[in-house]
Length: 280
Image 1 (cartoon, rainbow, N blue to C red):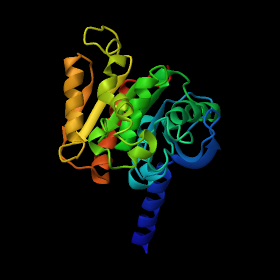
Image 2: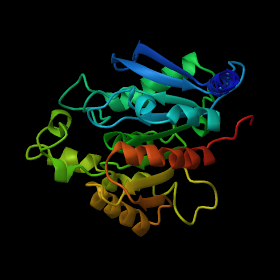
Image 3: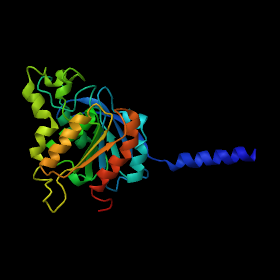
Image 4: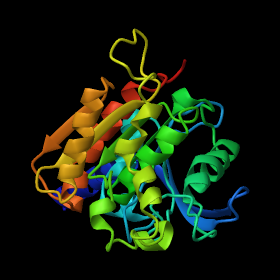
């Protein structure tokens, strides 16, 4: 009996020590009219009188807002780094783009404007770019890069895991034609959204000759067995050729949750290192 009581006490202690709060909510975007659920993780001892950094984490193709909190230990990272973690819903296959052919699919604006405004209006956030970072996997990795590059006044850092950084070789897959139009007819749009063709937006802010911090800290992270790896390698080489500072990591692994669970702590380490320290 004594042993049973002892074990019960240990279990209760372990449970109470983890006090992050996972909130499932829903709201309608002011700019886009998009109404989707959202998952928010508040760190332990969240206090509305303080100001918290926020990390936005995007899901991949066919996923939803609940993926990260159900399939990884990301909520524990909110405690570890004392940040608010926001998991928006990017729809099944929006690619986080403002679609020209589907006016209901305006997910770049939804994330960069509607979601950010909703979080800043309802939680104790640091309402400046130094208090916001963004990351994501696969479709969400592309989305994180695309949104951060186009909204450098909103985010201070971005990381992309297993990202579809150039989707032109995958024209028949991932519902891409539903947001971009078919490749044969809309080649220019497919060209324009490839991350490699948007590096001019980063050149001045991340040049190696710049003495101050990068305008947008960038990290690319991909497994060596990932089907997107050649596009990530090409992007890395292009960044080097343009002398744009960034971190690039290849690790053992494939395009799966085993990999993303393993690497998400490294993303938080990178992102928070470029954000304004707590209490400042």
